[in-house]
Figure 1 (cartoon, rainbow, N blue to C red):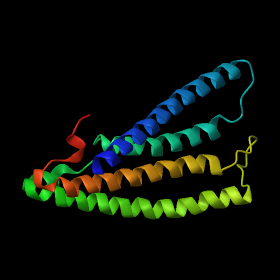
Figure 2 (figure 1 turned 90 degrees about the vertical axis):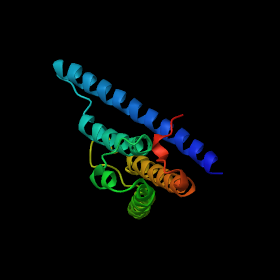
Figure 3 (figure 1 turned 45 degrees about the horizontal axis):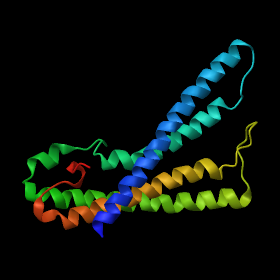
Figure 4 (figure 1 turned 180 degrees about the horizontal axis):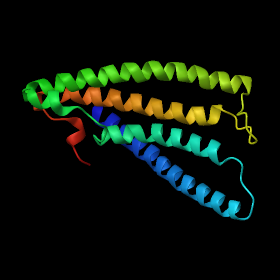
Length: 171
């Protein structure tokens, strides 16, 4: 069961990371387009808004993958000073606490997305973008992060006797 969840989590995280990469390419393309248009006295008039949406989406869609690959900034100062047998409980505490914080945040963010959708709230710009779209993408990233934290916690609990860190296992 845990193996299936790990596989699902990794697949979803890779997909989200792929979308984040595509958003970087989109931002590059949009900025280049805007530069060229401004050379001729024109503009898309949505650069700031859409780049902002893309940065938020890219950040939250990329977080679960970076967590899975152990790329987030971690304070190893305490962990390195503890005996190996205490690593997994501390890692578990961090994963569960992080899940609680991001789960709580995603609950309120979900309410915000639903409210934006129900009320038809749009951006106050020329494009009048329905705000539930970029907010929903951020929510999806939050949910993926929470799922990754749950899977990480389950891995830590099931592999505690081996004193291995789940993120050190390679595909």
